[in-house]
Image (cartoon, rainbow, N blue to C red; front, side, top):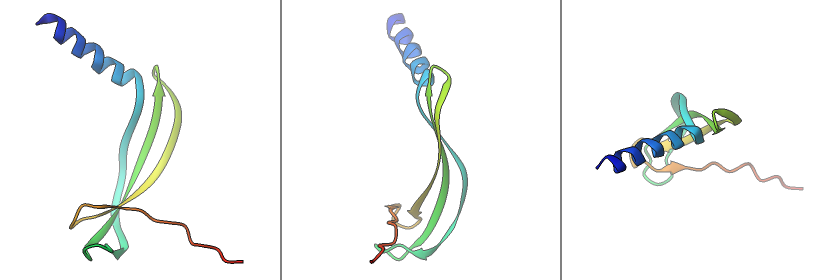
Length: 83
């Protein structure tokens, strides 16, 4: 029994040492409605940080859009530029 708990502690420590950490910075109502159900869309600002041995490698700020009614994650595409 003790071997399995020790392995679990090592796994948790490894998860903290290397990997990706995400933190929600803010949330607000987004303009428009869900194309699937017509529900309200929320915009969530997320700060993602890749960490290797407690050393931050990369810091990215992302904005994610989700529907509050059907809980789908919505994807935005950049405007198509015509020549």
